[in-house]
Length: 518
Image (cartoon, rainbow, N blue to C red):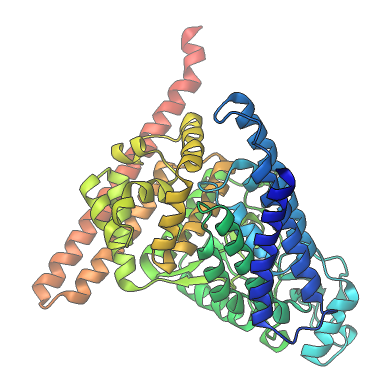
């Protein structure tokens, strides 16, 4: 029986994949690296599929033994997937990183195992780095830099960053793309697509085709470092009114599609609580300011940095002002939100914050989720349906609620997959961004703080007022909208002040309580 299942699993996976791959590139040389990468991916997919097909045949469903075994299967499958991503590198690591952020969708064994791909991406050799620089800039390293550190500051799925010094004495960070990534990415996406189709044939509840669609659309943008440089300059100008935000300046004369040279900025990762304590950086302030940055991007400008994993967000004390700064890196992946989408998304979040159930249903349906709006609200907020009904700003996140969400994610996996295939494409990157930001807040222990909801509400008020002004047909109407905006913003200021005073009084009471008791 096991042998037959293995045969079915292997044939279903490899035959389907092989046919798609063959149709894509009939003249592919058998010695081509793509064949090796494809064979490796197909073999791992077959082994994982076989494991799931056979592991539970002698175990009764829903027993304690069943769940313990399932956890073991999840873990070893996740480790195989992680090793495959590290072996095939490039696009595979990028997709693995995305999967590692899907806390609401995948079992913890997968997310915890795949999260290491953010910090353990393979490195290119120094000779490969020299070759890319030679090909793109037409000069040797010694001609361009006074010094160039061979050990990279960090390695990611598509590139690695080296610290260097220019001839004018400026210290820069040089981001160099891994060789062959450009050429290999489209083939990798096809391999992932056909293997996912094979797995879906074996396990109908497994629906991740939306992941392939996103990779196909976004990978060319992420591989163009000139596009990344322009995004960096745009967001630096757009959010220039935030004194706590630092976006490194681009050196265009040393930048190409595969090389990006920028101002060097040191700091600790945004989830490094020990670094912040050592450098006397206020953790709550950093979390609040990060929320301000992303609320402004999403609700006001509709231009959103969509890869906020901890390696791309640094914190530091500004060398000049000595105040805490957030350094935003890696601007290759941005989502441009359409005005109508922003409007519905603003109103949806306002409804979620207040617990306005008719509003939640209305604006969720307007975003295309249909009758799945309760599930959508839970996925978007990573909160239970009870918390959504009450208003997510009214109920703190508890450990039991997190356990409930993970349990429900397993039970509703087919519905979640259907939801992700149903929502507008621009929503997918927003969900990924939410997941990454939520992970940072969880590590910093600042999740679902009242200040984050207040900042979101401010941005929603401003965005809705701007939309109404664009539709106003008289000066009187413009004045009414502006006054209403002013009043709503002042209300939020007063509420924030009230919370601050309340918190200060509580702290004072707790610190004086021991004296009072004595």
